[in-house]
Image 1: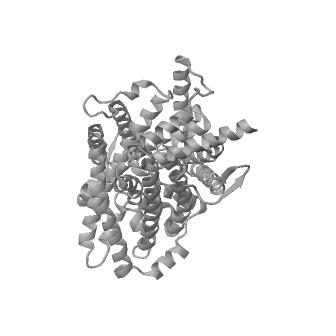
Image 2: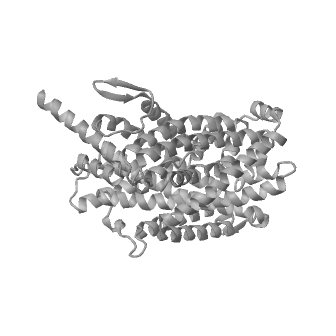
Image 3: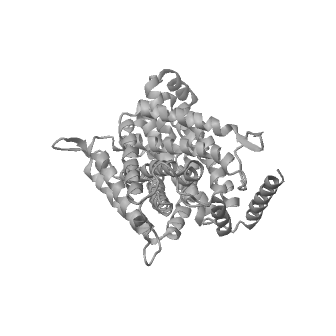
Length: 497
C-alpha cells in the first residue's frame, strides 16, 4: 500500500470512531463531553507515538501481538494478541451495527422499531439483521484480498474527511452558540461515575492505530511511510474528535445527540440552518460507508493477526491456511467474522442499547492491548537497542548507553489508569473482557501442552536474523546496513573488553 492507502486504512478505523462515540459519550458525560474527549485524546497521542515507533521499527503483520512477543515473550505475545482479537471482532460487530444505524437515518420506522420475544425485551431485530448482512459482505470482501479493500478505503475516506470538515465549518459559522455550550458545561455536568464512564467510552474514538501496523508488511517503504502516516493521522483524528462535541453542544442540547445513538453525526448535520436537509443526508450516507470501512479494517486486522500468531506457534497452524485463488487467510476471516456476528447478535438480544453493550467490551480490549504495547516498547529499548528506529517517541534520556522513553512510562500510567476506569465503570466489560482473556489463556495452555511447546517460557528464536529479513523484505536496505553496522560495533566492543 502507498502513503495514502496506509493513511486511509488508519483513518477508516480511527476517523470513523467519532460517528459511534459521539452519542454514547454524550449520554454519559453530558455537558462535559468535550473534557471527556480531551482526556482520552491525551492518552491517544501517547499511544499514537508509541505505535509509530514500533510499527516503523518492526514493519510486520501482528502489530501489538508481535511487539509483546518480541519484547516480553510468547505468553505475553499471546495475551496481547487475545486482547486485540477481542477488539477486532467487536470492531467488526460494533461498526457494522453503526453503519446500519446511519443507513436507517432514511428509515425512521426501522430505527424506532422495537419488539419483545419471550425473555428478550425492547429489541430491534431488523437492525440486527442488517448488521449481520453487512458482516457477511465484509467477510466476502476480505477473502477477495487487500487491494480491493484498500481501494474501497481510499475513495470513501477522502470524501468522508471533506464531509466531516464541512459539517464542522458550517456548524461553527452559522449555528454555533457559545452561550449554549457554556450553559451546558456549567449546569449539565454528570456525576463522577458517569463522567469517568464517558471518558472510558471516548477512548474508542481513537482506537484503530493498530490497523496501520497490521498493514505495515504490505506497505511500501514502511520506515518512511508509517511515521508520516501515523503522525498525520494522530493530528487529523484529534482535531475531528475534539471539534464534534464542541460544535454539538453549541448547537443542540446534549440530550438531542444522546437520544440518537445510532446516527448522532447525521442528527447534528440535520440541525444546521439552510443546508441541514442536505448535510444530514450526506452525513448519513458517509457515516454508513466510513463505518463499514472501519468494520472492514477489523476483518483485515483479525485475519492478519491470527495468521501471525499461528506462524509463531501461539495458536494452531490451522489458521495459516490461505485461499488457493486469492491467497488470503480464508479460515481466520471466516472464523472471526462469524464470531463478530455472534457478538452482534448477543448485543441485540440483551437490551435496547446494543451499541453501548459492544462498546463496553471494546474499551476493555483496547486499553489492555495498549498497556501491553507500552510495556513492550520500553523493554525493547533495552533488549533490542540495535534495531534502527526511524521514529522515536520524544522525551528520551540516555542511561548507560540506552535511550529511556519517559513518555513511554507516562503512557503506561495513562493506559493503566484508563483500564482501571473501564473495569470500575463498565459492568459488562469487567466480566466479559477478563472472561475472554481467561478463555484464550486456557486454549493457549492446552495447545502448547498438547504440542510439546513450553507454556510459561518462550520458544528460542533468532531475532537478529528475523530483523534482517524484515528490513530486507521491506526494501529498507539503508536501515539494514545501519543494523548490521551497529551489531558489528557492539561485537567489536565486546571482544575488546
